[in-house]
Image (cartoon, rainbow, N blue to C red; front, side):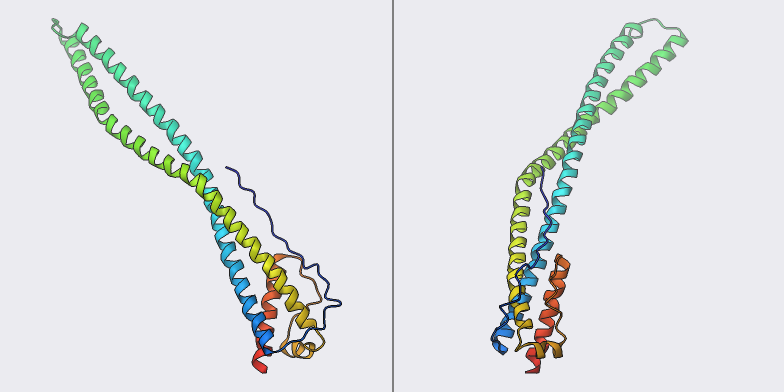
Length: 228
């Protein structure tokens, strides 16, 4: 599963020249504040969801590798169990041919007794193996099923979050252009200076700069609105 992560760098390319004759009032300022805050909240929400989705996607990659490794180990352990059963059969046959019903001297008797003890120990160990192997197999199959469902659903979720994030960024670009135009308009400049509005003539080039300018403009618009 491969998910492409695109970097979002939105440059405000529209020039403020020629669009500075903007009428404004308390209502337009309040509307800009409301819109700006709503867009910023959307950006933060969708970015958080997108980042979480990418982390979930990365975790799935690791889980897929782990499931593959666990399946290989289970297969090896099942094979070892089968081999152990075959070994017990051979040891039992050897014990019966050498020891069962035979006249044995003390040394042979001790050897046969030790061999029987070893066979019984391996039988006891193997008797508990099937239940453990079956449990591991069932758990592994459940994990694999959950994984297979996730590799279908998670990329779709990430794509939806990415689309929502991009949409919010596009809306912010439009909002910021309107806000910069208002702040730079001749009739608003005195209020902007008094409220400490940022220099909107400087075009933000990175997402951080766009977010910082947006928040700074909102803060100064609030000061202007509260002063009227």
